[in-house]
Length: 418
Ligand SMILES: [Zn+2]
Image (cartoon, rainbow, N blue to C red; front, side):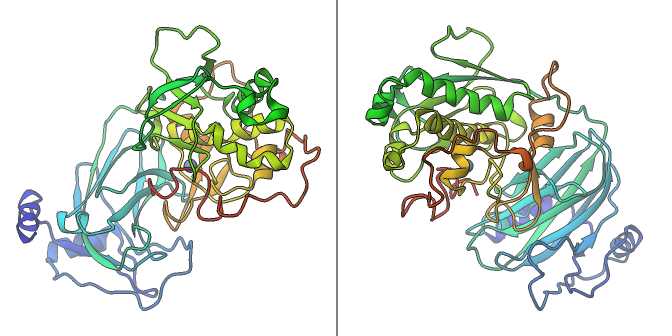
């Protein structure tokens, strides 16, 4: 292990290491001060905060003035979550690449670190859990902010970090996405790292007697809910009942199978939709547990469509958030899954990062693009997010069955893709 540290130091010819000032009352490092520290080659000084910062606080531990083509090294330490460090990076133009790399000792420390790049409003722009983060800015920012935290349940640890900035890059264009809704059954379908599953064609009879002859209605409700969330973006849905085009590649949402602990699962959070052919699954058989709720077929279809939309959100680059009216909250109640929620601005789930928010509209605009002929205006807001008020027999006591959704949510990605 010491060898890897030596190699790392040799690869990154040491500039002076800049300490982060960590005390609540400590001074922030301005550009000039940082430069003077570099030139004076001050010894590394590590200051550990006495108490944890208030949860969600935007207080920055340091500010760097880092010009294009420059690099810096930081040394600091972070306590177990909910502690985190925030480092202000200053203005950035669109088309600049920001690279952050932990030293190998820190990167290999059990539990690992979470690196997140935020915009000036605390909106997540990029995230990594493998010790290296690279991001090309899509938009100008008055201030970028780097966040560093330990993985959930990991103990306090120190780290060294190298930051590089490069300008003049091309802004990656958004990638339109074709999505196949697979109702035709599957053989050896593998999603993420789960064992492959096979399942018969989608049929209402799989969901209990009252849905037996409602297969088409269920499919229609699923698609209706998906269109509700994504119709303003460059996301085109086709179903296996239509003839799938040969080109271009498409992402697939499978409808079938069973999982004892999840309603749905996606391959990964595909930030900025880099992959055009990833897949997700909605475990249709897992919905049989809600038979006693006597949902209408349309309500049940909307609920399955909501799970499909959440998993598709992952495939288009969205992380988990918190909030009953946020699609990407994986612990929403059944009631909000049936009635629908919104792709809005919401706080990040703590396992993603203990500070900051997810602006789904911005990430989808930059990753997927807004539909050209699209309706002008913002994406559905939480306040008008209940378009499907078919509550009918849906009683207010409706809650997820015990053991489900209480321990972290119904999306299989919850605890795995931190
Ligand atoms: Zn999820």
